[in-house]
Image (tube, rainbow, N blue to C red):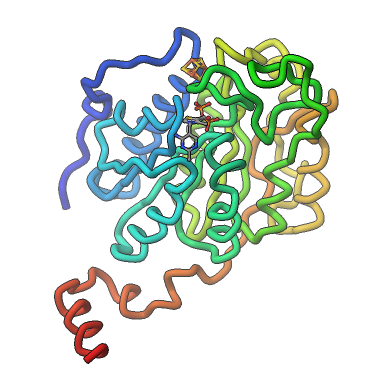
Length: 290
Ligand SMILES: Cc1ncc(C[n+]2csc(CCOP(=O)(O)OP(=O)(O)O)c2C)c(N)n1
Ligand code: SF4
């Protein structure tokens, strides 16, 4: 087993173009720490972590961490992640996606990965705005949001992504906030170690187009033991609906739901046995076609 690299080397030398004050920095640094700590505590080689990026400001994270990575196309990193995990069960596969990226363009992929309980982790940089394309509304923007494409304010209600994920079959559902970084790191570690589809919606500050720092600081609180029965669908559902991404209400942070179920990849025994002899597999497929 390759010894873990010291955490400092996990920050790449790529020039960082995020705006000052952007919440993406918190996610980058907490993912770096989560990977470094898991590598040390669980003996997982750094090269066994794979990051996938969507398209948007958030996706740049995969360039800024010195970890194996792949850019998906807009909204499509999840199917690539499922394929990577299927081909090599030793890997910890983590998708860094945006709210425009995955709740709009890629929503179908998100729902089906949850439904299949694919053993991957999805971290949504939910700044509730299209950052890279300069401030249009997304599915989690609140009613009345005024962006570049909607100067009169939007009339739609936001969707509650946690509710969608619970209904779709995700087996781990959590919410973090870029203003509470230690808590965020613990959620990342828990999500990565969860066997099955793990989903973390991160309320991320967009300092330039939608700065909700004061609002989140005033409304968020960390779930305490007993606040929610994480193994119970109804209990998680009730807690998830406490805040609907729109009205003024307390915003819970933490793990809402965590259950064990068979994972998608287990249904493919040829992969489950361990590393696959890919040449033999290709030969088998080709022979079968003859
Ligand atoms: C299929 C497709 N549609 C639209 C775009 C243009 N586009 C690039 S980034 C982006 C918005 C990204 O917003 P979000 O996912 O919320 O990420 P953020 O920049 O806020 O991190 C859009 C619409 C694209 N690259 N590909
Ligand atoms: S536009 Fe927003 S999300 Fe993008 S880098 Fe700037 S602050 Fe961050």
